[in-house]
Image 1 (cartoon, rainbow, N blue to C red):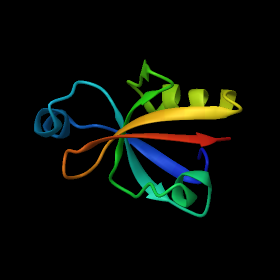
Image 2: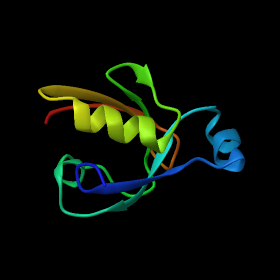
Image 3: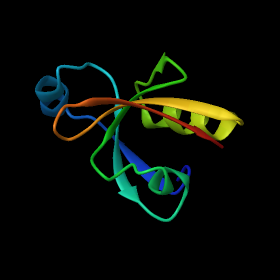
Image 4: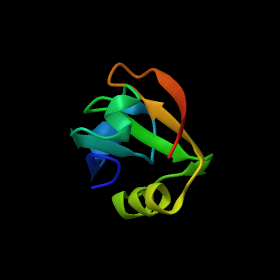
Length: 88
């Protein structure tokens, strides 16, 4: 669990529907930094600090290693791309 969330890999179907070949889905969201920043279950985190995220392990390593400002590129369930910056 990183910042109050658990994550899952995207399925081939999800990647096709979202027109992406990378990203990790927010599976569950508990009290923590991501929830307090307005993220919700089902959102897809595609980049951390402009680095493409391809696995849950890579995402959690990036979130746990960083301190200071972190920038996320996110795809919402409706397919909208958002950028979110916050301090860890």
